[in-house]
Length: 618
Image 1: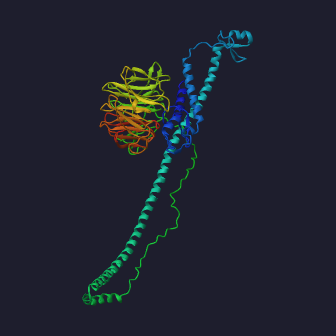
Image 2 (image 1 turned 135 degrees about the vertical axis):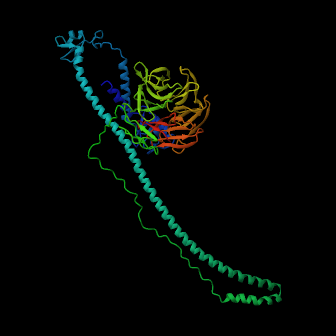
Image 3 (image 1 turned 60 degrees about the vertical axis):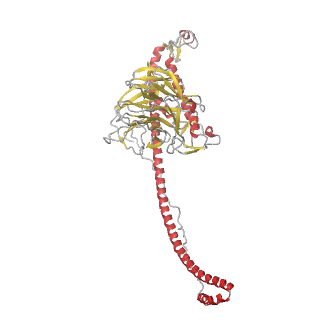
């Protein structure tokens, strides 16, 4: 039972982690859609606008007049976070306290050695003489031993009950994910039906307008034909009259010669009937008295007759072959017991929530060796897990700092000799640790305690380690990149002048340029190898070339830049100048870390889906 409290606390801590900053909630605020986030995270996400989309379900949220601070507090989450922090503090204090004897509160100089059975209190020797003389008593050690077994039974029962609650909450989490996917499918069906009806109405509208145009053209021809005929008569009669007037002014001889012609023309039109009005047949639209077309109906499915078990099926100790997932769209992930669907696939996805082999609790970092081994930083499980490029589990090792102390790993990067630099945090400190591929500590150095996540990358040409760092209190925090030698000597800092908000991940490309993703400013900063600023790209939004909470970053052999676009639930590709090229995949839950394999395969972790995806063709 020794591992139960830790495992149980891990499940609840995951439930109490903000999906924006991936840390324990601070001043949690609940949105109308019932999703909860840190107040400062919401402030960064909402910006200065009066409305924004929920990062989880995309529901539109209107802020009250006093902004994010006016949103309701989640008191239950606040209480649970405080309790979890207190448990961690008490656990640490208990381990650190020396095992000295317990002193009597009435006689501080005496140790408690006896236990009064009638009074059921521990005693020292003086207590026996003063108030418990003649009472049957036994040694305190024996009394403790007698009580230990019954207490252990109660503890076991309590842990079992708590574990059932934990399983139920995990089931609720999976149910929420399914609910989001089902809602998206329903919304897509409604939109598709609407678009189909609009298309049919548009086609009908165009047909009616065409009929109206044809009728108009037919009537217009009648009018123009009659106009041309009458204008010809007008021209002939007008010319004859004008000519006669001109000759009349010149003398009587000319008028005598033209009188006969004028007489004929006037006579021609004297007996001619006046033009009759042209009869047209204008078109009239008669709307059909029909109601608005019914798109369909949203029906609620009836509840199943039998309850759905909340406990997901466990995976075996050695994972089965990994399923093939289609690359297009990127919406499907397979969890639990896995099976081989195709011998060759464009995308392989593996993993699920948990602490067993092949399971993850916060896969925040990933790196790939020259031999094609995938190293995943499994944060809450305090370990590095190793897999092949086919998704097969190889081994794992704990992220030990010294002795039995372990750290939670934020990120991992390969150095030029095939070893791994890992940055992480213990209960009291933060470190950069160099492990070999089997998990043996080779060297390490301390980092400033910030309580914020970090990214790590290697400049293999200069053998420098680059680590992101965020300091200061929100909203006045600022970020930078620290460049170290392997012995921990600080070489330089990068990015202080560009106003970094939260540099989460970092990489070094083939030209030794430094690329840093900033999830607060929703952009990527690019520097040369000496730390001089070159340019930035991105900007908050969901359009092409825009980012929303960018996380992991890497480059391919062509120099293209690949970014995990967290809140947009996609992975993006840009060229080396920051020009948008394409969406590599969309519809992920929350893509976090990315890494490029030697043969061009792309590895992506999904922290909300507790999985790793390998794209063999994209």
